[in-house]
Image (cartoon, rainbow, N blue to C red):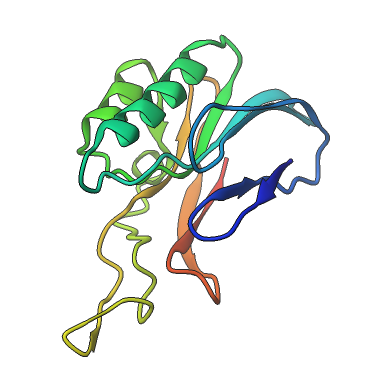
Length: 166
């Protein structure tokens, strides 16, 4: 589901299980809502990528409002996954926790797993910057439990991927 795009935009979901009811969310970089049919039952999936909070943060707040609204709009077991361009300290992330979502890395006690920038992908003053912040997340509603998470290198991207076993 989804589609690629140039630059930072574009969101895609690849699944071994059937995806149903896929529809686009009104975020600038691409986001999708869908149902995932697993052997353990249906899970609602929000694959999201809000704009980053650079300069005027109005777009970032707007995109996070769309994500929060979509997360609140279902009573199904729900996953919110993607580059949320926010740490768990940011208000939009605390708002998702406030409506019942849990951070998978925290829930699985996986320790600090920074995902941006990918080590060596960003340079300042001639020095490669290590991974510093966790802005890619897997959030789970009640009825789902994270067993473990791991951040992994993906060649050719400026983020590390966050893999969660749920």
